Image (cartoon, rainbow, N blue to C red; front, side, top):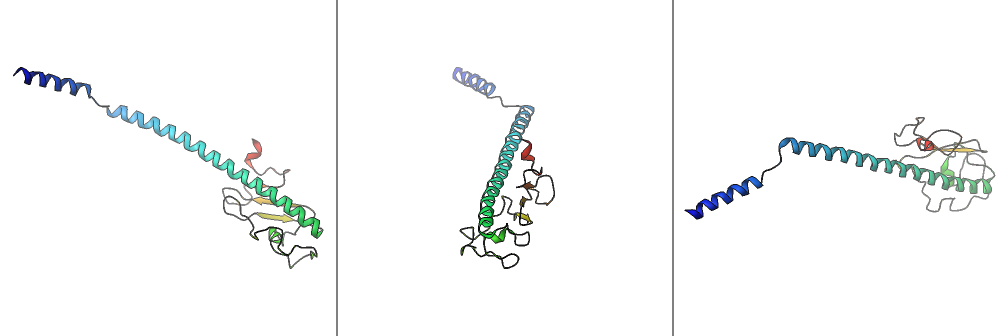
Amino acid sequence: MKLLRKLVQLERQVMKSQAGFSLVEILVALTLIGLAGTFVVGKIFDQLLQGQIESVNIQMGSFKKLLGDYRYKCGTYPSTEQGLDALVQKPTAGKECKKYPPDGFIQDGVLPVDPWDEDYLYKSDGKKYEIISIGPDREEGTEDDISSDKTKKKSSSDDE
């Protein structure tokens, strides 16, 4: 009998010490976790966008060098009509380039696309050129466009 009482008392003590969280405490904790997660995910997406913009700037730098080589060998930059494709295969229209390399100016023969899987836009009068990435919204002429022409304010990354 004494042993049974001791067991019942011990069971009550164990039950009191195992009290759980209230619903309000659980909801507050979930809300805090959600807010923290939103902040972290936002920072990750900001870093991803910055990386993509940096990638565009690097690719435009490569195009600048290749277009310089093209101008050196051909006398002018490719026209707007010839486009960046003139770096991959010899243009058939417009001014003829007699010193065009047999394998083109891009070794693998594939014109790169921007980080959003869109083709770069190219404009040129033969003396100067502009390369444009239409940016993450994939619409031409919007404020997130990124231009090789540094005098034009096209990219929000230029503000930083």
